[in-house]
Image 1: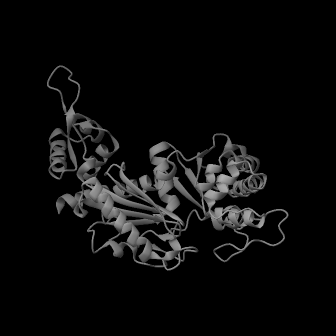
Image 2: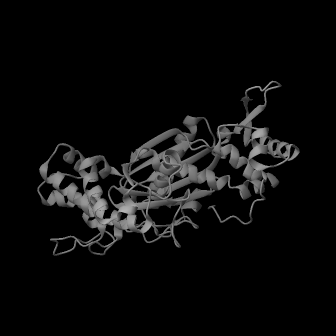
Image 3: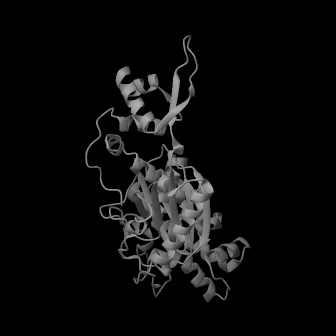
Length: 398
């Protein structure tokens, strides 16, 4: 079961919109709801009674007294259920059980090879979900939603990965259907950088728009948040910055990318490309983490190569800044841990090639949520979908 488009518009001031107020605030009184919605006291009482009866909000103490009896306060019931999420990378995976507000309750991390295919990877995810539910003292019936992000292009409406360059066997695989026998809840599947960007924007930069996040790990990808929403493009392919073809001075033969094309940004600046170049230079590295560790030792070859990668990456980001004019560019992924060795090249190219108007207030920063950005982003995307106003009204009417 995936998230389908809303079938109808929620009524203004309806119970779904009232729940949205509680999801956005620590707590509210009846008077607060009346002030924010313009609804009458009797209508607000009806809305709150319905939400309390459904367990969606709960009393949370009393407000300060203004001379009479203190007003009762209510808050979104974040403990009503759990959200199960998995942030799947090319070589590793993080999973978590979160409350309905997106806070991580229990987390797991393990190495994987996404090229092993969906059955192998989803079996591990299923086992970790069961372990986390048990540790959190919850049951499968309390799972309100499941979210996965993957390092490949996703048709968001169907929850299927489409022609992924590095995910052998995943093309058009029914990921939501895989969970249907055990979990009676909606399943959301999205591109990894979309989830990371959403988590970072909501938790760290809630007033920023647009926000561009660039992930530089094994591969290279980007996610864009505009007006608080993930911008996926017409078919879900937005943000595929890693496969933009670039021209690099002094290169006679363009490197072949994992997608099969030649000269992609990722083939120059991705983690796998850095490993390739370090090995050709005689360095014994097997993973992106090995490469980052070598950079941090100050190895001259590794530093030279990552600075070059930063400048090439910065050229592509400069084009994105000129096109999209983001307020913040967040860089994440394993290579972001090379810190200033990577960031210096990025900033150099962005400020050199983009117009002053686009860069005068621009921030280019490392992620603050780091490895939990994807998990938090998935949980928040799930919660927004589950508790969309029209769906809340459908839930209560049912």
